[in-house]
Structures are given as C-alpha cells and as structure tokens.
Image 1 (tube, rainbow, N blue to C red):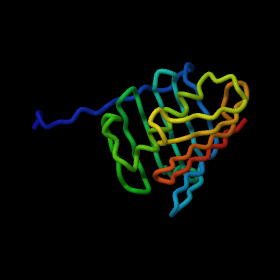
Image 2 (spheres, helix red, strand yellow):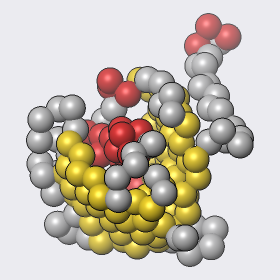
Image 3 (cartoon, rainbow, N blue to C red):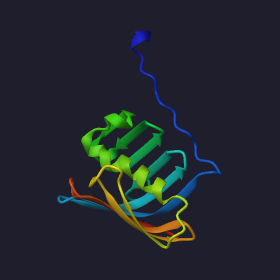
Length: 154
C-alpha cells in the first residue's frame, strides 16, 4: 500500500514579505450571491492564498497556490481539489484566476487600474488603489457570468 500513497503538497506560510488584504467579498453568479469576509495573502512570485468566510468560523472557500500547484476546499460544496493549475476543474478556474489578478495589481502606482486576462475574454478587472494597495477590486468572468467584488479595509 505504500506505493499507493499520495504526496500532499505543502504551501508556504505567510511572513513579513507577503502582502495581506482583509475585507469583504461578494461572489455572484446568475443563480446566487454570497457575501462574506475575505483574507487575500500573496507574494509576488505566484504564492497566493485566499480565505473566504461567512461569519465567524464558517469557511466558504479556501485556496492555496504556489507556482503551478494549487489546493482548493469549498465548504459549501463539501469538496476539495489538489493538482496542477493547468488541470483545474472548470468551476474552480475563476477562483484560481484571482491569483493572476492580484499578481498584476502588485506594485501598481496608479489610483485606478483596468486589467485583462492573458487569455482573451476570460476575465477583466477594475481596481481602485491607494498607495499601491487595493481598496476595491471587481473581477468579471463573461463566459461563466461570475463576478467577484472585493472591498478592502483601510
């Protein structure tokens, strides 16, 4: 049975080099809308973590990404997934694309930013920043009609 054992990916623990944003997230689809608390933690070299919670102690989505490896736990779906980002299941693709959005925002000096995914039409984003830190970020996925609206505390 030792040959059947799977290897569990370990993800970095955030330290002083990481950027952490705390606020609220509204996630909406044509069928539902969920609002909750969010903690987004990232490091420029594609380290990304997102914790989305509804109320104290009730996790909705937990994402961890390091390079091309990722892990996602969706409490509302009672499901988890781990693997290479190139093989992300369809419903998780927008969630994991948030790493690209925040990576592109990192270090921006502008007060307002408009971003596009590298894959034409996959996502678009607008952001208001202050001192290089995001205040409001809206990410839309036209094909799936999903929308993420972040409001960060300052």
